[in-house]
Length: 118
Ligand code: HEC
Image (cartoon, rainbow, N blue to C red; front, side, top):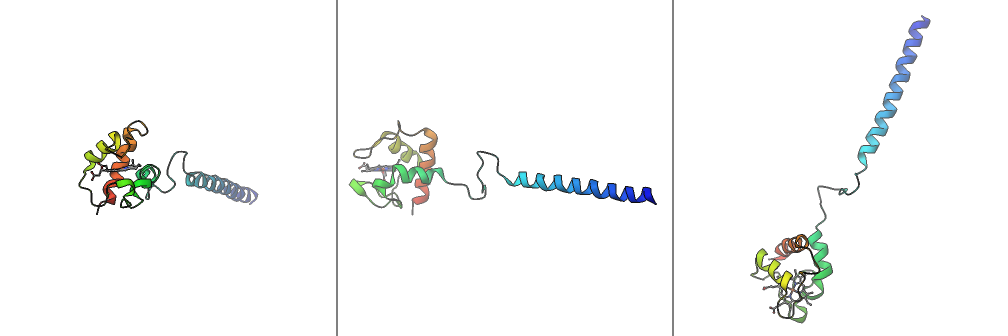
């Protein structure tokens, strides 16, 4: 009888140790590894942030402000290639961003400008 009791205690202890380690495992899995988006289902749009920083001052957040003669980006006929071209090299009073932004960033902005289009 004593041996049976010891076995039961042994199972209980082993079980609680397993449970505890499972619990801490699950906890560490909930934390996102560094550099990963906490909500991968709703990724932040880097093009939006860049547009707000670099473009909204003239074009407005919705693309229609037209400050200093800035083109309306909701009605522009410029396609993505043309947007990359204008952003990289500038045009008349629009400054060039080819030095300030990487080609990746300009591509992200061009994708965002496409979303503004109505
Ligand atoms: C200093 C003001 C200013 C800023 C900042 C600016 N733009 Fe412009 N943008 C203009 C002006 C002015 C024009 C019209 C150029 C012309 O007359 O040919 C223009 C034209 C454009 C065009 C051409 C549209 C068409 O129909 O041909 C695009 C695309 C564009 N801008 C995108 C951007 C993006 C993207 C940014 C940010 C990276 C940006 N602009 C930042 C002033 C600005």
